[in-house]
Length: 170
Image (tube, rainbow, N blue to C red; front, side, top):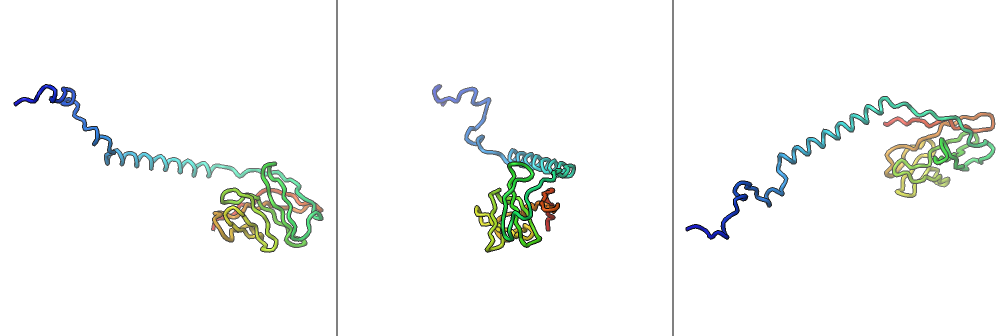
C-alpha cells in the first residue's frame, strides 16, 4: 500500500537527511576544538605580555619640587600632583625629620586613599583597604599590592620627588 502523495516525504528530504533539532546541539568534537583554540589564544596572549614586560624599560621621571619642609607640621598631610597633573599623591610628615609620600590611588580599584592620623594608616573608603603609613604595605582588605611610594630627596629646605620605588613581591 503506497502512501498518499500528500503524505510522501519530499525528494530533497531523502537527499539531505539532516535532522534539524539534533543538529542544533554542539558536538563533542566542535566543543573540544573550541576549547583548544581558545586555550591556545590565551597562551599566546600571556606569552606576548611576558615578552613585552621583559623588554619594557622603566619609565623615566623628572625631579619635581613638591613642598617646603616648613610647610608641614608633624602629622600633617599635603596632596600634590606627580608625575603629571592628573596623578595625585599624598605627602605625610611622620616626624620632625621623616617624610613619606605615596600615590593616592588604591591598588585595588584606584579609589582615593586618605591618611587617618588617629589610626596612623592610609585608608581606602571604597572597600575598606588599609595601608601602612611607614612603607605603604597592605594591612587589610582587598588591595593586591602596596601603594606606590614616591622617592623623596631633601634639597635645602625643599622636598623633591624623584620617582617611584618599585616594591618587590614577597
